[in-house]
Image 1: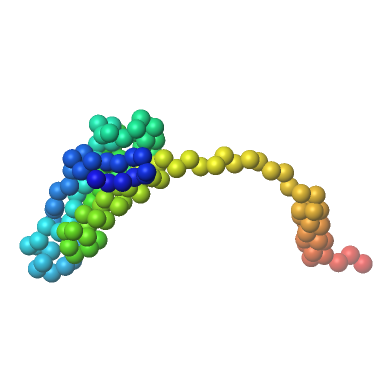
Image 2: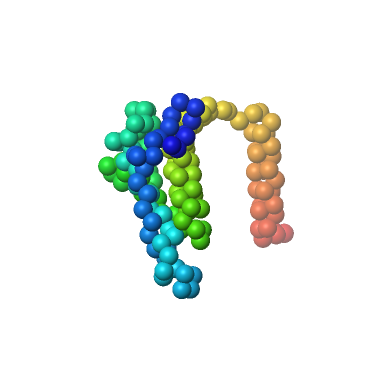
Length: 137
């Protein structure tokens, strides 16, 4: 059981984990042992609340298909158990980040001090550039 929050959990039977061979360098061991993990989770057919499903579909992430299937490949570690734990943790982080609601930005106006400082530096810069011209006699 993958625990997302106090009220939301994903049962193990909804997460499909397959062991596959890892890519890249690693000598003879990488050719013999299936240590990488391929995780598939169908968010739309899962027991997640509807709010979670909507937010996951709205995410622009390459790990989520149009149908709402999350695909994660974990091959960072040398053992299958560590890669399984890594894949599950990455799935949990993805779901938590999708549900996090950003605080709305309230536009603010510049202060009077910042306006005067900006105009002062503009006039000083203009005076420096004006002093670079030809000298008239």
